[in-house]
Amino acid sequence: MTETLLHAYTPLILWTSLGLFVFRFFPQWFSQLLGRGLYWVGIPLELLALSRQNNLNQLSNAGGFPFLASVVTVAALILSSIVAILALWICQHLDNSQVWEEPANRGSFVLASVLGNTGFVGLAIAPYVVKADAISWALVYSLTHSVIGTYGFGVAIASYFSHTEAPNRWLKQLQAIVSVPSLWAFFLGYLTRQVPLPEIVESSLQGFIGVIIACAFLLTGIRLSQLQRWKSLQLSFVPVLLKVALTPLLIALCTNFCLGLSDERRFAMVLMSGMPCAFGGLILAEEYNLNRDLITSSIFVSIVLFLLALPLWIVMFN
Image 1: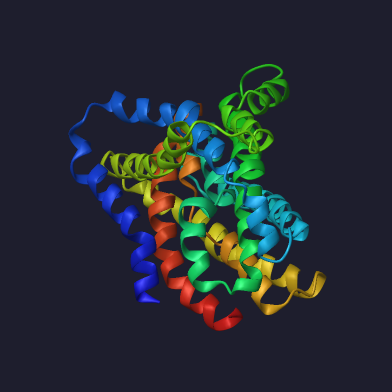
Image 2: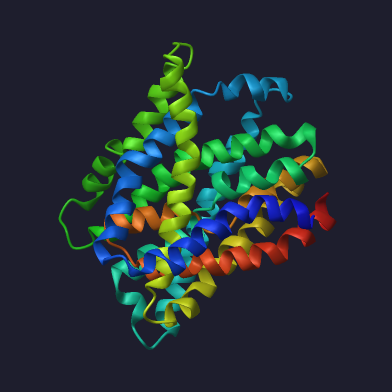
């Protein structure tokens, strides 16, 4: 287990530390440019490359495309959104500081509670701890969460709290989702996956995935170094508990009593639903001007909590 976690988290620790201790001396505009560059260029190219890897054939070889895993993913997104909004309402009424009255803070709270890192972290760990006959469930969960979750639910949430004072904000949300470059890139790659590209273009696309992952970790380290108020760490505890503790518990109960999944498949769903807060949430916070400190703190705290929860899940379900 120690070796597995070491391999999975080495890139995260390396690049995050680089951003924390080296790039902290770069000007403020650098992190903003990096975040917007990931949103408009980096992540779309990554999804374009991933969608051309013929993952559906790989899933078929792993036991068929488990459509039910996509249903569980969407259900997890809906459940976590409802729980996050309810928890936010409670926080607003219990916290006398009025910190949750700020739309930017509320938006980051919901993003941290809903979006998980099923790609960078989830797919790095799943092959080591999920059994072969259930690995396709983890893959489908990650794919569905990335497309529908981060750049569907996530964009809608970020746009909603970014335009709370604007008229026709529901129309603005729809426009924001339709204009998400990552969705267009994913479907373009999926529809053209059988069209061969020159070898140098294809290899460059696939090699670019590692660069994007490193840039996402780097951005997190930079934002950690720029934290000016450690109060954001305190504010992050509630969304992190919702993301890494409550959501996996709800998914475990639902997949057991409602769907009757086997232990291996239930473990795959619990594992992916309990992933640390997504780096995509920070990218959305950069693009929609939400509370970046809260998202960054949530990522850091959720990784620590996830490391503590993972051995427990393995004992319970696997």
